[in-house]
Length: 170
Image 1 (cartoon, rainbow, N blue to C red):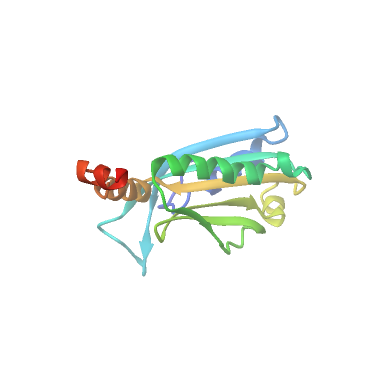
Image 2: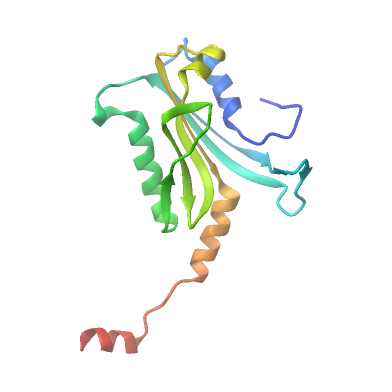
């Protein structure tokens, strides 16, 4: 969806897409790669103006069964995916008003927030025309930050030497 301004996040576009299509087909799984812009103190920061984000959104009927909980499944997939890229990833508590208070998190790697995820608050769903009984989840990851962290982690690889092997054996 073309925007008349520089966007900070991708997920509003996907939320609009879900609201326009959830009556036609369920479940819905959509994603988008796109550019976002970082704004600092009423000026756009020149050295990190444009970042590439990945956003995934799903919509489906909510489940009471913990084994089929889409939110927990989403978290486990993100944890597995990011653990293959770098170590040090944790989910930290977040406080976004548009996400469900008990089902949201920030994705943090080495004290750097690289993304967020959670279930869209039912009131927000209702405001954009989505049935509030549906579970609408989202993940948004800043790929530019993730790439820079990956590059730093690759430069810190500690290679084992023959001397280390001898010490281990003895």
